[in-house]
Amino acid sequence: MSDNQTMIEGRNAVLEAFRSGKTIDRLYVLDGCKDGPVQTILREARKQDVILNFVAKERLDQMSETGHHQGVIAQTAAYGYASVEDILENARRKGEPPFVILLDGIEDPHNLGAVIRTANQAGAHGVIIPKRRAVGLTGTVARTSAGALNYTPVAKVTNLTAAIEQLKKEGLWFVCADMAGELMYDLNLTGPIGLVVGGEGDGVSKLVKENCDMAARIPMKGDIDSLNASVAAGVLAYEIVRQRLHANK
Image (cartoon, rainbow, N blue to C red):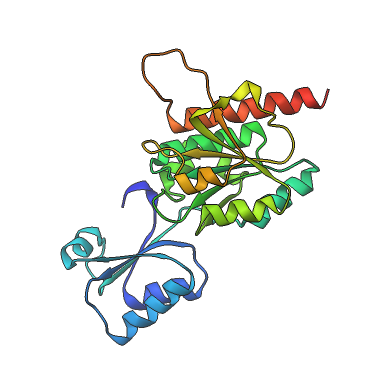
């Protein structure tokens, strides 16, 4: 399997993985299979809000490494996920105002790994990603992070907007990357802050953008209209670092 993710195959093995608390990103189930053991697995998956994919037998056969998938294959994360509270605790432990990076729809594992690496170097207390329409913590993400994944907590949430609302109650302000926003140098990016960066194609989604307090534009002089998502995250993260350093002088 690509990205060094573990694939767990077979009904007993998959059910045991769920019950043991193993972090599972996705569950692939034979479309139309409704027998008792599979229904038990589906109940566990829904309890843990795991992404479900109902697929044809040919797809499972193609994915299977053993040839004995019994109609179910679970894809586990290469690393375990933190919680949003873990990220806030990281900030409290360091005695710093929280600095969190939220990624809306990043699907390229190299981009996610690069953002986690930047987050670590910029002093962000954690990264938040959504469960759906986004890459998880794959082996490629771990390798691209160059070890930062061992030190920077990554939380996976069902709903980014709900996570923003939760963090606003903790005093955070939110700025999103947006080409139609204000020039980043003209914004006050000090204090407890969440930086939201969108996916490679669509940027920050409308609902998430509406829940941000500010929109920041990176000055660009070239002939194309956007930066790679991880580069944009790095530029904005270091503007936050610059303003924090200046505010503390």
